[in-house]
Image (cartoon, rainbow, N blue to C red; front, top):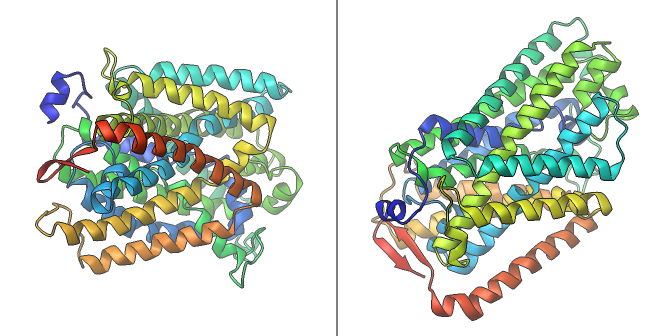
Length: 468
């Protein structure tokens, strides 16, 4: 099937394993010096501990993803797993939920970049000039996204490794700056979130930290273009989580002990850039905060945007190939990049930038990334159990130890995280969630009433192409 796809103008099978790993890692590892205010608000100086616990919690889910990824050789991830495991309706729902997280990233990233530029350069730009500059950035990323995939992944890898190097170096600089003291930690379980039904706000905040981990699931979107053994996808999935988790724990441990951190947060850094603001206002540094901003904000966020952009485009491409969307979404340009999905994502991102700055819609929608992601993970864990009950003869090269007991364990973790995430959502977030589901529901109705009557869902499985 892969050869036929290439002959018919499909994706180009040329990606090395290292680049699939960097796509996933670059997707995960972002906002580290922008969202730090959010993390601090959720989990206080104990943010480093929350990240350590969340790394441990995410790994079982990632191992089940690794098992599933080696069974199916085409892009689609959640779409494939949940269709095969349960049915095509759940497959669409899971992919729609995960895309709620992915689609939120491009508009959020370009606005975050412009916010940093505006603050650092004292441009004093108003809302709509900011939106205009962010729109130009989006168009530039769009132009990058329709180039050859080798160009994309190499550009993203360069951005990622620069961000990682500067983040680790900054951690050591802070630790040995003379402004770091254990006494500054105080109570590490403080949180700005209220307790709900007796569940501490810190625990709810830790569950919401699933957001800085979503991205490992981008690996199954890239396997169709990989020229490595499918078994090796486990290295990219688990390696991306461990890389980011270790850096998160180290970095936020170094940040937690800084002098004046609590005062800076309370004073003027609740909306982002807590660490950079602390270096500038409490430590009196000028040069290094700019370096951190340039590398972490401009390059680090750019790496994340490209990772999720590529994944969203490939999910839409896969939906078209499997008859969830019109076949025109599977058309590729001369660089073997899906064209209409790229255009669709650009238009949607431009709309979201306007919504973000004309109402509370986008900010509330953005808050749902953690919930949508956790729900998609939970459904996928359920489908993993179903797949192995329906098809015990399918043998994965990355079979988890413990079989169904381990898969159910991962499922419980995902459901628990999703439940805690519900406790951190406001009314606006729920309104946006149902609006998003309504849009998906309209597409689902079209598939049921029109598309699937003519073109049944077709998915490549270990037993060949099957219809659903």
